[in-house]
Image (cartoon, rainbow, N blue to C red; front, side, top):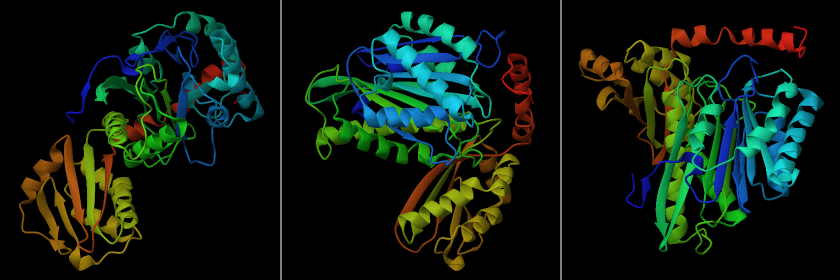
Length: 419
């Protein structure tokens, strides 16, 4: 970690001027008592920026939040787990807008100042009959130091909550950045199912914040993959309220670079935590590509290897199968020359010049048997480089994802579907 910033406790409520709350609304199951709806709010005016899924099938809350971020100064984020409110047509949009309107009224802000996010099962109408009555409790219970409850409320198939906060000093002003995230499956973001909410008490102009967030997402959430699936609901939203005081942080300055570095670190830690907690994942794998003809070629190679089901199955079986890696390199559509390709696994040469290296297979197996290791691919053509974080693919992943439609049983009881 950089000496410029340090880890602190608090998550999204670590920065000054933010309050939050989480409640149990029984979104997916009325008998469940787990937290499944949360609200993050700035007590003072702020600016906001966000990035969203590039999937052409977008959930209703994504469409609503994109509009609100364009139209105004969003200062609150309402989120639920258990239902994605995706592929729900006009009624889904009405539910998302109504939720923003009702919560905004309770907060004393405009509907357009409330972003709405959802995560869960696709295709089911929102059980508004259980959600709406909880809005008052959600708003009246807002307070500081509740960041962890938000992180827990947005979990779906996650096995642990994910949050981080850091403090930094810029031009003599102490400021903080906090974040929480969720995601364990449907992870292959190109802004995946993933949500991330970031808060800061730094003073940042909206245009600069848009750029900071975009750059941070590119080196974090756009660099991870678990199963190669892109969700309909992926959202990263950041609020900046300036409560720490000081001058506005500007792009192209030393202060701006410090802020960008800290934000990159926060988002990278959240992104990596998603991969480590991937559905039935046993390996955290860093894929480094260098020596490519261009940045885009390096990216193509890294993504082809990181998303290959064959490669990922090899990792799960502790098999250092460099043949599967080089075959993925070959179909990546990047410029490659077979006779120049070098592949190292855990620091050991597995392939040199496109041929098997003189290395002990047992030593390679020991590297892949660990719960974290690095694959380095050198194309030896030029200087293009790219890094992506991936995982293995296990039989348990398949078993886990066979059962989602069991959730529709409750929907039938609620009268939300006839299936």
